Image (cartoon, rainbow over all chains, first blue to last red; front, side):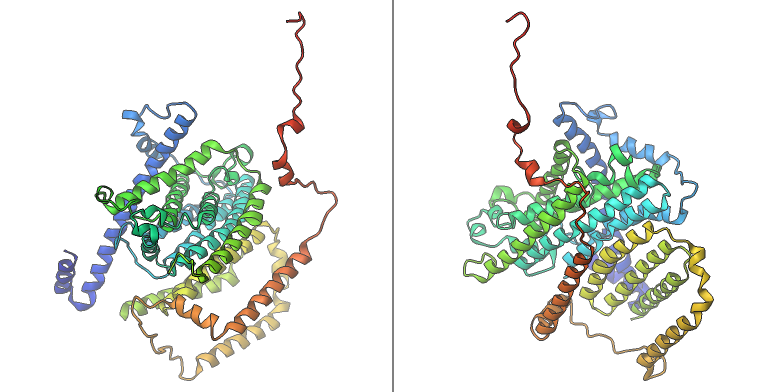
Length: 359
Length: 200
């Protein structure tokens, strides 16, 4: 069908503009195909968060709006949409409104290289992992700019905390990605997933024992916990720290401007989950190679795994008390970075022995 | 080809505007943010030259880490703009000399053919060609010693920076996390059984 569309476009507009317009229209269409369900996922993640934490605390959670509270995200969205956006009197208006966009943009753009199933990816680039690292490192700007442009001490303190925290955990995250890159021998995310479907256990049909999580268990833990810290989620949410600095960089924002920060945070949670699944939990592969499980389409497995991993975020939030700031820094610099460095050398040495799992 | 040229001129224009704004912006935070924009567009231009590894590394290192720390510092400084602008005319001769020198060097580099920037297009090796792999192969084989030497120089710089700033103050209160973890309930809680008054 796409070929027919290309031919039609070329016939109508000529060889120069035809393919260009075709690229533009199809890209836009695919982008919408990714972002629209993503927005829905973000909206319903907020409901799932409140429900799950409610159940964990022996409450019911939201149950008033719609059946089982299922329309709650819609109601929240409507409320935020119709609220007035107030900018503080001495705020730097341009930057103040740029900040929410800056935090949402990288969270959205990163999804371009995420493979959802074999061959189902918007941009199948060779430097996919690098691209992700580069884009996720931009997320901190939204927070910093928001904190500074709000002209408020609480917001500024939040921004300072987040700048330090996000830059610190990026290092540990980068090192864990380097280990994954080393064992897969590719920066392409589809290749990373395909590389996990090979090995002794995969040959026996037990795919889930061949995935990276088993040989790289410490790296996966480091990556996921760093991901929690990068998204500023509990127990690393000193950036927002309601009890000390109200809501950090978001204090002065209202209405849709606030909602954009909120969207960015939840979208980053989904992103960290999907990356954990792709790099350590075999992406779209079924856990056991059997006819019954293969009946499910690959994207179904990816979504199930993503859902389980994203629920871990909520479980953490319901379980752990907030870390003190010096404890966060100690965990990042003195524990995670040495652990990843040692494991990097270990895995490198392991790969050179005859017992290497990755050939 | 047309599309590529249009993209190049767009990024080049943004890069130039951002670079000029770094110098002319009155607010130092705005200057730093314009520098971020300049880095970002420069990386986009490198991407056009099919140097995707360098382009993304530029974003990762300079935009993602270095400029964040820059902003961190600039935002916390209490900069008096009036005082900064006081010495403008006295510094102008020196500044202008350096500026003209740099402009002259750039003209010499571009020199050969007058303003002819139509360099040969980089070869298109197809989608399977990995820039990163080629770069890694060169760095770790042909340029091994230079690369290792650069790493050692960086390590020395890190150690020196830490040695210069690390001071042990007597009056800070530190907590020893391992001691905190090792604490057992028996160390801190004493359970006593107190008989109630009527002896039950």
